[in-house]
Length: 232
Image 1 (cartoon, rainbow, N blue to C red):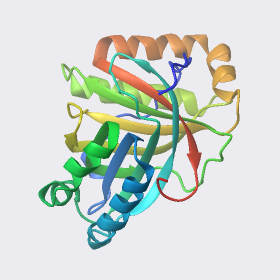
Image 2: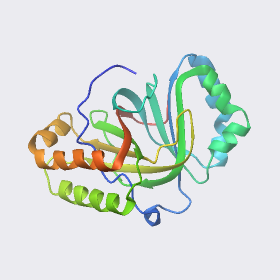
Image 3: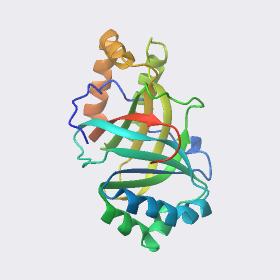
Image 4: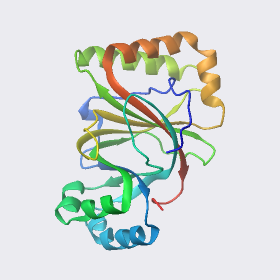
C-alpha cells in the first residue's frame, strides 16, 4: 500500500449498532490483498466462481486501497472487495483449499466475514473520498459506547459536508488478521469534503477524539477509490 499520510480522524460514523438492525440472512465478506501473479489470480477467480455462486455472493463495493493510517498493521494490500452473500462462505473456501491457494498468489491477504448492514442506496463515484474504518473496541462499557456513537452521529447529520454511511460489517470470522470488532464503510461524495468537514467542526472533531480514547483499543483508517463491478 502506498505510504500516503491521510487526515482521516473525522471518519467515525455509527461503528457499532445493536444486532437487531442487521438484516437476517445477509453476510458480508471483506477481502483486501496485493496480487503478485495476475494470471494465476484470474484462474483462482474462475475456479472459485461456483463456490461464491453457491452462497449467492455478489459485489457491493470494490476498488483500490490508496493509503492508511492507524494502530493496526494492514500489510501491502492495494485492492479490496466487499461482497454480500446469502450465507457464510469463508469456511467453505477454507475447506476447499481456496484460501491457502490465494495466499500463495498474494501479499497482505485479509479476509473478514460477518453480519452486514447496508446503509446507503447510492453508489459513490470514483472521485469520492471512500474510507474503511477497522476497529477493535476495548468493550469496557458497550452501552456507553452506543450512546456516544448515537450522539456523534446525530450531531454530524446536522452539519455541512458530513460523511455518508455506506455499510457496517460486524465480523464473526477472519483470516490474515485478528478478528476486528467492526468495519465501517463510509465516504465523502466529493474531493475535499472531508477536509472541509474537519476544519469547520472542531468541537465535533474533539468529541470524536475523546470517543476513540475512551472506547477504541486499536483502529486503522483505510483510504480507497471505489470502482464499479467486482475485484479485478
